Length: 74
Image 1 (tube, rainbow, N blue to C red):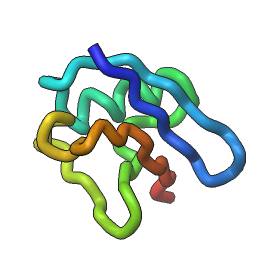
Image 2: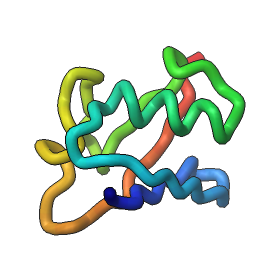
Image 3: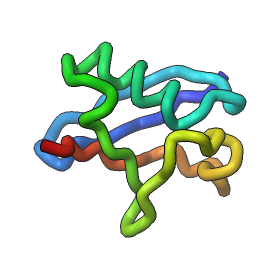
Image 4: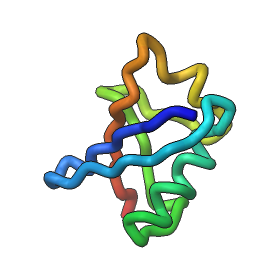
């Protein structure tokens, strides 16, 4: 089990515990439950890389860096 820290770029950090086998879609559902937004409206990215829903966390989180950015698609 890992802890992912997500920053919404507005001063709020969200901490989510999940497994490395979970997909980005699963992570979006966990984040949506905490911030009160629909999972379809959430975009998760690291710098300029936007992560697709089918990628597992093991594939996209490397070097034990678990901080990502959350953006809301309107």
